[in-house]
Image: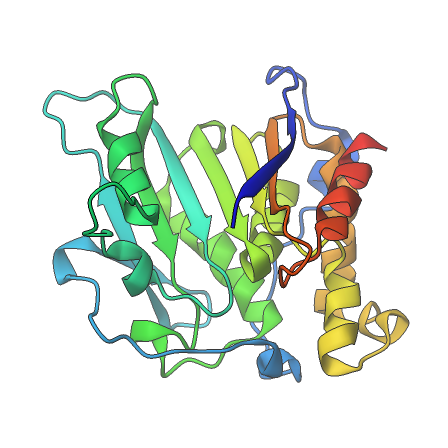
Length: 263
């Protein structure tokens, strides 16, 4: 698919976040399966990420989330920004980790290697977040609540100033990405690729739970809060979406996201 660039919003990074954005930044508690595990499609690794590139994240419930961290290889480099990437539902970090191997046809890993090697990009590292139930985390049960709390724990484990973070999400990965933007309004940039527009409406479509009912749950309430904080996000905001009408995530979702931040 060709990706259609819908909007790039540049705002003054020095603009202070609204006071209510900070007040709304309550952290997420890990809860047992609340019925949202059916939203996920876990897969097993065929070729796991090598141990040298694994990044272990201590989670608030005592478990350990195994992710991947790629570092800039150049000698004498200075500190730079960190990309935190949340993949789509049917994807695996181990698959994203593998380079294309086909001359002239780069994939996601090839792009990361290019950015990390660039003299002008300013990217020092990239963290590919793996979800519960996926790959090396197969023993952990995924829920929407754990997806959000694990995203918070990843940022906490990194110990990087939020001004140096670039957060990107694809498909279901846009849920934790937007969540982090609500918690950390000083992020350098937020990238939403093939987002679903309204996460609550997506839950209703997939699970049959009416939006009004799910919004009254703790995680549903937080999803609605985070969507509301998008319009106050002061950093670089980029929306990418497939222009093909047959795509799984409809183009109208991208327009809906843009309408929220443009309100």
